[in-house]
Picture 1 (cartoon, rainbow, N blue to C red):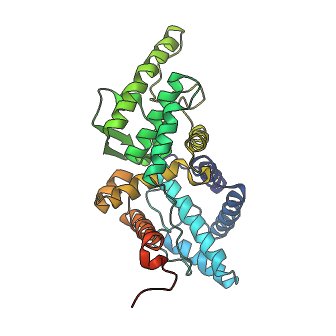
Picture 2 (picture 1 turned 180 degrees about the horizontal axis):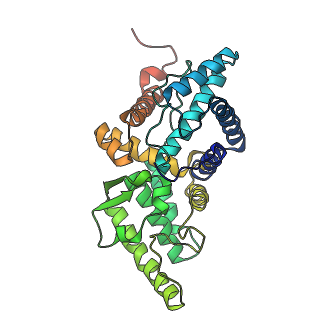
Picture 3 (picture 1 turned 60 degrees about the vertical axis):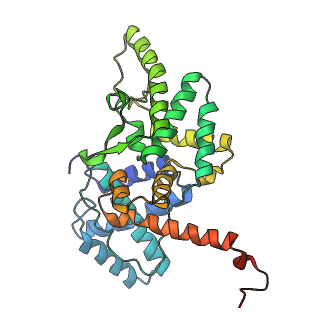
Length: 319
């Protein structure tokens, strides 16, 4: 793979930056990730290895080392989680072609299920996007961003860096360039296509004005004046929090990644095939996609406990 940092501390820094920008990780969470990954990096260095070269055997040997040190189960589970997460990030960024930690069983700690949103909550976010913004252009852009994210399940890094060429011609399918040079096609819903068409009108007008003023045309669907040339992950993270407040949805529940989870969970709840969802999400391993079956099972159990008359009966189940 190409483009991977040459030093382990750069791997950690890039991973922590993405955790803060895309998932809104709290400061304490970032500090814990940093400590755990620094410990792993130090162990790899002492064994003439590093994040780029470590394989499954190396990760397992490190966990054995942690056990030998007498670390608690919860600490070892947290360290394995951090290692899995950085390698998942590295795979998405194209730094590695595999995740050497994905098939390693943890020391008995339950895997945390990803947070998701109800359909009604997504509807409120979409409605907030239509009315939130300083100008008509802002409101059209916000609507397009949220419609596309929920309609396709894209990673936020893929969304903000979409080339404008992918949106030309009112496409029924959107070509998404994933990390590592992998491409996939995802269908666009009619509302997402309409939002994209509306945004393109004002986006192209603004781009034409830039060109007349001597600036080069932007190749991005969501251009900006920043160094990257497009809307940043961090700016979109702040925007989605603003929309949550405006839509009456708890901001604690909403991150860019939550909409990706909602896309997958809502598809599965409506009968979509798991392998089709794997393809749409761009997961290399079906095991990554299978977590959504557990999310759905947990939600169904919650609904039964909340609404079934026997579950609410004060005197217990009837004989």
